Image (cartoon, rainbow, N blue to C red):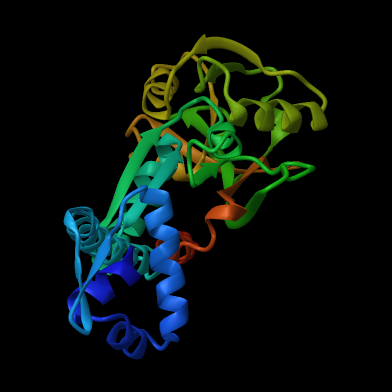
Length: 293
């Protein structure tokens, strides 16, 4: 159709061939093929040139519209390749949302203002399936995996160690570092209900220290857990990133033998890594994580 448009606008097959860099024979063959598809004559001779029939004028008008849309599509595609437009679906858990995601997204907004964001909190659920199933481009996950799912790239962000959270005046509060086994006989305040991926880290560490924690109070988040601890209902283990706002009625102490640590990664679909905005978001998340170390 673009060949037909060139013939109509230039007024002859020979002129169209010159403009397009084809031979007149090639132009004539393409017009003949288009006429066969249309089932109607598209050109008629007038003197030494040609002019379009009614069908030819109709197709020429549509060719101009198509050409405009193709040009717009090419521009949009170029913008997408350059990271000027597009959409990123991001999934995260609460403490990462408070500590890592805001500064990273603020930088992304400055560098890629045209990129739309689909941002959702997944807590205590594991957000990795969102990436595996193609519903998200990036998820912040809170535990290492023995095998990385096919098509997923894991980028390490930071290690977030757990701390013992005790009520003020607790028998162990005077110690700077507590052996995890020293908490074996204590009543515990859980801080992840319903169960999520962080809970297994605590149970594995306690198992390595030779006991299973006695959970007497279940709490849904770290803030509530600190309130229960301050009231003397038990002790709790909370990751360092979850202690940004400490309750005045608790003390926080390091752990050892072992020290539970949650390893935080950004999980991304390998097929999404060609997006400049996603690569820049990964860089921003790494910088946000480094600023906390």
